[in-house]
Length: 462
Image 1 (cartoon, rainbow, N blue to C red):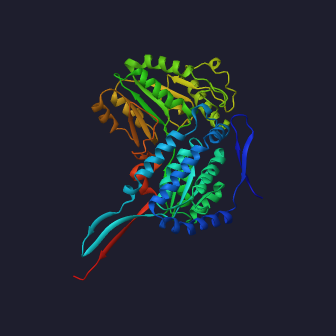
Image 2: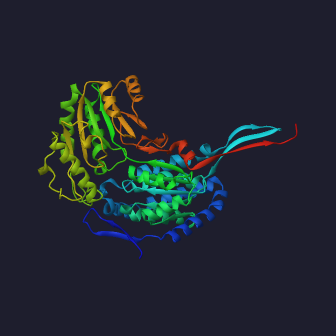
Image 3: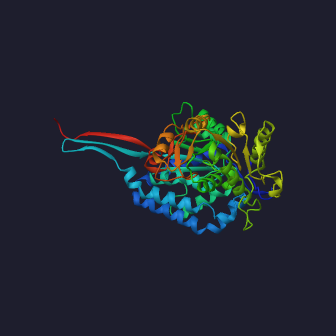
């Protein structure tokens, strides 16, 4: 019997979209078609591939009204924020703009006697397993360079954002990317793992949970398939004594609460120098209380529902455990009457927290943040590093030299100074520890979707 994959809308709990999942034999046939289509695509001039990818992104922009409405229904983001087009366009423009340089061969010698160089060959078929929280940007982070570099791409999107893969496919196909070369497939976990185990792909990129990453590694075991895994996070902010508090509060709290806290590099814990702690907390509470939780289609809504009730229940559980262990919640329920005990979840700020509490050590991925006072850099660094994750960290100080010293002691992929929750496409996106492995964006991002191939030509006899 065919299994149906459903998107349950967090807005009203109804089935918003459903699609039949492909059986393994049909999925294998789709991958085979992609593999067959890839050589002709790779043979096109680079400028041609770039033009078609850019055209596809322009088509997504032209479909903005429909896409923004669908995102609200699928994962709850308020329509007032206009989708993900700013980041999508910035990343696409940058990655296509550097493609010629990033993919240029490394020429060691080009003489009458020898030709020695390293070229960057496409893997063949790239498999993108995309998440629901930023469903366009996270998918296109890999799709864009993969196609530009000459690969075929198979996309499996999250069930919560079923329609996103279809919109991306429509745009790419209308822009001249062959239908077999880029395919959006609806797959179950077992079929996904079987395709990986069957050596269906040259590279697999996954953004999601640690458990999901572990399942993909198990499926790929022994196949030597290249993997890129962006997994969990518990990103910290550290506010030093000389920080501009208004700036720090506005940025860090936005990093903690935007998208209902469902951001890969969202701020989940904050450490503040003891001399500024009370002032920071007071301003942070005021900032959060100014949010408006409600229906994402209402113009004044700044905080929509979480993408699914089970995600909200995870956050509720962490908060309840922390409060039972002595944490103090500072946001009151009466300020957020839209919290319905389901997907609509009020934001929360916790103090009197410590690292014995899950809310300070396990990924929350929701609108909650714990704030702790610290005496100085050593304590802050020790606490920031007391985590199984390492994606980003945010430092706040006017002393750049001090920031460099602290930054280099933090076990993380990216360190921000006086900003947070931002992917700069010129700087590689990476992590360490249980956050995963691999690189996206920047010139290094092209290394993920290609493999080096060396040439050593002796042109004449000695």
